[in-house]
Length: 151
Image 1 (tube, rainbow, N blue to C red):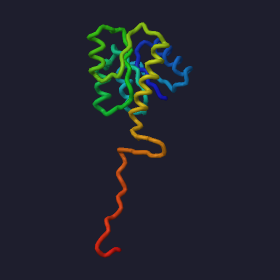
Image 2 (tube, helix red, strand yellow):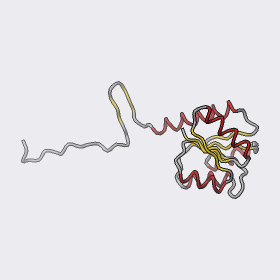
Image 3 (cartoon, rainbow, N blue to C red):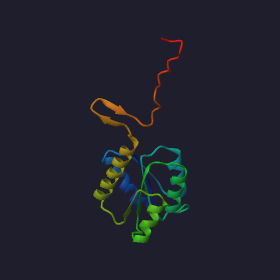
Image 4 (cartoon, rainbow, N blue to C red):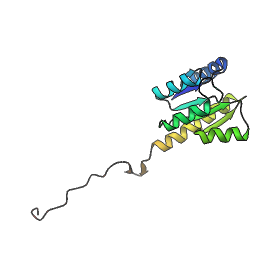
């Protein structure tokens, strides 16, 4: 799974990326809002971790831009702004989850796994029962109607 960490604190970004890589994620980082937005839009990511207070482009603006562009990656805001109003603003901007700093690495990983489970469930809309599968997104293959000439 590919994770982009958009965090301006170099030590925090390095710590998160290293921990995610050790856990088997493919992780990279961007150090400010502008480069983070560009990287998020130019590459395919399953999960994006965004700090709220970023240079050049604020985390709220960044998340809003990503959602308006059609990005479907799960987004977790990770920031020191942990008040109720801050969390509500982050979620309303388009974040899927919000975690305040200081944070537990175990909790961060658990939240990423939960976000991944949700996105996997949403991407597979095929209904299955025994050997029957129904995919609501597929167009049905219709048999041509018999004409008066065919018997």
